Image (cartoon, rainbow, N blue to C red; front, side, top):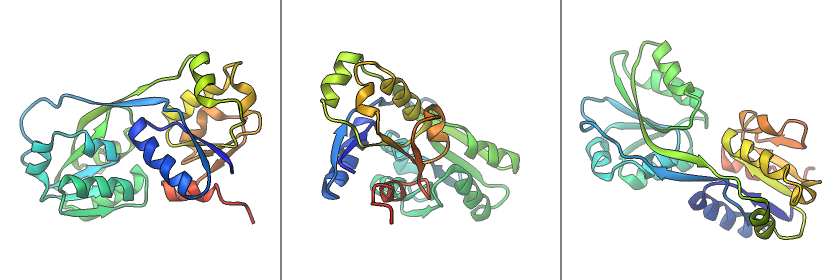
Length: 235
């Protein structure tokens, strides 16, 4: 698809851009959010029976000393990239769900006893689908926010400089926050012509909410493999 816009936070964007180049695409990296670690206060993470994680960043930004204390607990994660981060952090038993918070909740409920206490590593920006599902089932869950996601839309001059003068063929949208920031970006008069024929490839319907009225396609599953499949020519 030629030029592909990557709007993820910088560390994730670098990995995605490398994958795009390897597949023959021309990535344009313009992060529209920053990931910042939070200070995790309070006592150590003792007395839990399982860990749940819906974001790789939640593991990466967690205090390493605390992660070591819970690394032997069963760790339930939302997808393969989060699983890789959990294993890299030292978790020994990692189980992967089907890519979204609802399937993760179902997995945890099926895989833990009714009296289990679940430690949920997460960010401040989330839909709370996972913890609400566990609470509705009467399961004890404690959300620990390890990072903030800070939205950042560059000013027109900066955006124009980073995007260049060639049209953007496709834009990858990984979250509602990035979708919202991208909608604001493409409305800027100085860069709007670059997006006249852009297809917005979204990891979920939620991620596309702010892009209503634009050419949007959805991944078959909420993961990067399925998102990349949208870049392949349609048969």
